[in-house]
Amino acid sequence: MKRRSFLKHVAMMGAVLALMPFELLAAWEKKRFTSEGFRQAMVNNLGTSTVPVSDKISLTVPASAVSSASVPVEVSTTLKADEIYLFVEKNYTPLVYRMALSGAMLPYFNIRIKMRQSSPVHAVVKSGNNFYRATSQCDVSSEAC
Amino acid sequence: MSIRIVAVEANGTVTAKVIVPHPNESGRRKDDQGVFVPANFVTEASATLDGAPLFAMQLGPSVSKNPFLQFRFKGKKGEKLKVSLKDNKQKAYAAETVVK
Image (tube, rainbow over all chains, first blue to last red):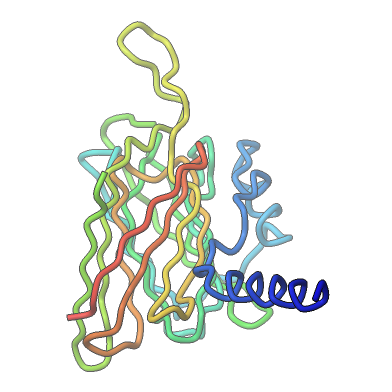
């Protein structure tokens, strides 16, 4: 009898676990969002600060932004993208986001960001085991952050 | 706090737009009294299509107030897109829509 109720219990637990919705994958990693400068942010995220430029990545930022509190940044690529990173070189926290894409995703992401001052913006795409980069300068006329 | 989410399919490609009403304070901004406004920003976001993961991302304090996200994926009309978010205060948000 005891064994019976134990088995019931286990079966129920399993059902509950199976019903749990898809949870957020990785917890927020503070190290990636370092404030120790752009080079360190690259190293913490990619393991290197030198990433080759690729013309297969398209990074669209306004050449000059009126409001530095809301700058649209669009990244797309014809590479097979496993991960996308966005860095703003002169922000206190250079990494804006890190995105891991599944197979159904198209390599495209558009977001609005804050910029502390005029700065180069870098999009990095991980394709297989390699990183590729596109860089664009954005000049802002007022200060945010 | 209601997240606006829309997903529209055209030629097998779905374009989704999400707007999250959130102060997204970086923790580096000072208020009128010169006191730092505490950090309060979205740190994690993920999306699923009919339960299958689409992406998982981590976000920093450089994202604008009321974060706007736009992304694309292969999908069909009628599929269910769910976006989940979490902020640095461990508050969780989610929104669902049906692909149109």
